[in-house]
Length: 238
Image 1 (cartoon, rainbow, N blue to C red):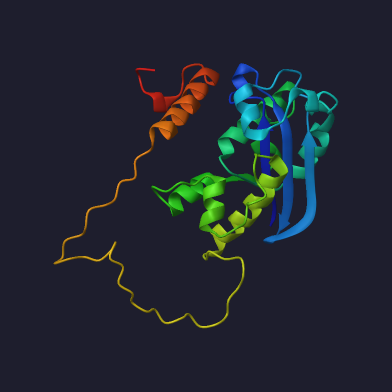
Image 2 (spheres, rainbow, N blue to C red):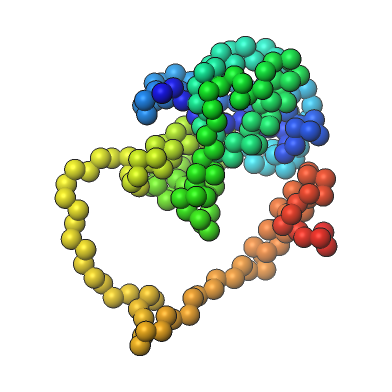
């Protein structure tokens, strides 16, 4: 099976508001092995990058000035993904932007170009309900080093997602095959988790500090502005 692990970076959150792709990257995998073949482009979006998006990926308007427009890389991109299964974290977001870019060029939508689309965020939520399932959280969970990742970048994120996807679908939390017999479990009492007379001790609640709550509020307000009032976390009073 041929798969392309793909990621994009954009000028903002909503292609319907005119936001554009500014970076696209994909790494090729065949039969669960990375082939070493990849595609990676920065694109001039012909519009400004939103401040909120720039804070996430660090890509500036000045950096993009001399980069090719999406129309100039579209042929190579469509040929690269043609017939493959796309593996994307939060696929509706990236596919929405790709479809918008393809429609501008009278090209078929993403799902007509590729064999299928697999959303690793949806997979992670089914595997780990109630837990954080961002790419960083999954790297921590599956012990995949992302120490070199300080900002989002399409190629780096695609490479990390490839390792995460292999770990998620292999049924173990390590990419190393350990053929030795499992170690015998040894019971160790942990006062934080020990039951007393059949009664479970109360859960510890760690509350955010005032500074953390203020930063969180700033992020929500930025999302509210960029999504034109559609930030569901702020509630009806926003």
